[in-house]
Amino acid sequence: MPLFPRAALLAALLLPVLSPALADTAQNARLEGALQTALSLNRVLNPFRIEVGVEGPKATLSGEVENEVERQLAEHVALATRGIEQVDNQLRVNPQLVERPLELRAYAQRLEDATLAAVIRARLLWSTVTEKAPIEVESREGVVTLRGKVDSAEAKELAGVLARTTEGVHLVNNLVSLDSAAMAKTREKPVDAPSGPQPSDNWIVDKIQASYRFSRNLDGLNLKVASEQGLVRLSGEVVSSEQKTIAVEVARQIIGVRGVDADLLKVASKVEG
Image (cartoon, one colour):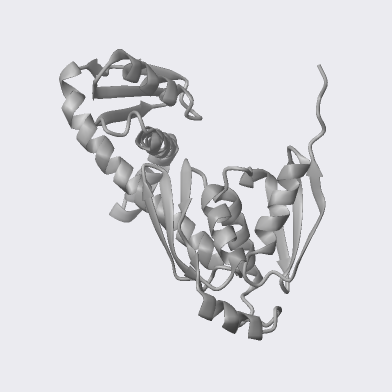
């Protein structure tokens, strides 16, 4: 038999055997990545180097943590990961790790503060009221300080609201001041005068959805957003009329939004008993 037909025949015979193995390997890698991400995002566990291995529905954890509480927490995080049903917890407790986690936690906190400040700056840029306001944002352990001069009391107030309602913020020091000269110029400009080109509907939808995800008051997964020439339609479900009002106001202040229709955004019914 020629070489090529033999190779083709061999490949055909091996394919049914190899395909499930390749699929299992890909699934294991996916679960491994999901679990490693979950451990990295956990504020208590991210200072520790925890090794993860996955085979089928079983995860193996190895490495060192500082105490038994953290050891058990890592196991709970693994079991909470979709697709993981069993955990072989080989983590060792090493009280000598106390110094190193403190350093790593400080580094993690700096990253978290930098991310938090960036999220708030983004929300300020997306708003029609604060898009051009020269506002500086600083975050230290979740305490946010706003500085700068703006041309309206509305801009100062909205900057504080956007910062205060961002997930992860504990306290806001709003040190933004009013610029009297800029305020005088603003009064001469028509209230509804456009400040730039109309953004696309995709851009508007993306920024509204991102604002919902960043807001501690809303569950962005249950809110659906559509836009047609800047006219926004909200649908889905919120837990209260207050949340519905917040969702509408968050959408309304995004650049390019000309109106918000929230008739299809329902308030969840309370279940008695």
